[in-house]
Each structure stands twice: as structure tokens, then as C-alpha cells.
Image (cartoon, rainbow, N blue to C red; front, side, top):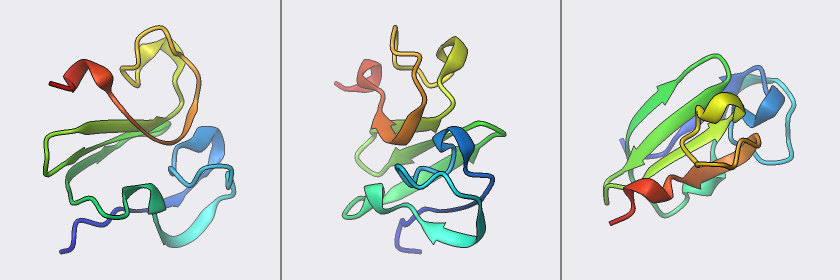
Length: 89
């Protein structure tokens, strides 16, 4: 395990983390935003996902409504993994 993250399935709202490519993915596709980082944990839901890296950073992406991504007042959909600044030390 090299710490890479792969996603597949329904691509709307950025929930797969592939940027502007919102297409459905029928096969696992690497989330390139994590290149050079070692992801140690991932949790995925129907509309958003979360990953933590070996250095303790936490990232979320996907549907941002109701504050579910943890980015404060920014309730927008995140098409790429975005670091949660509240956890930055």
C-alpha cells in the first residue's frame, strides 16, 4: 500500500475528487490531488469523502451543503480534496 486513493462510481458534485471531470467512473481512478502524500485513512459517503494523511492533515471533497465538508462558511462543492484548516496546527 503506497497511500494512494482511488475512487469510482457517480461523479456528480465532485464526490470522486477528480476536479472538473464529473463523469461517472466505471473503474477505479487515482485521485491525483494526493500525489506525493501518503493517505492513511479514507471515509466515503453518498455525496462526499474524507481522507487523512500521514502528516495529520484532513481533506474533504464532494457536496458541500450544510457544512458537511468542514470548511466553515464555504458551503460550495469541492471538486478536488481540500484541506480542513480548522485541524491545521
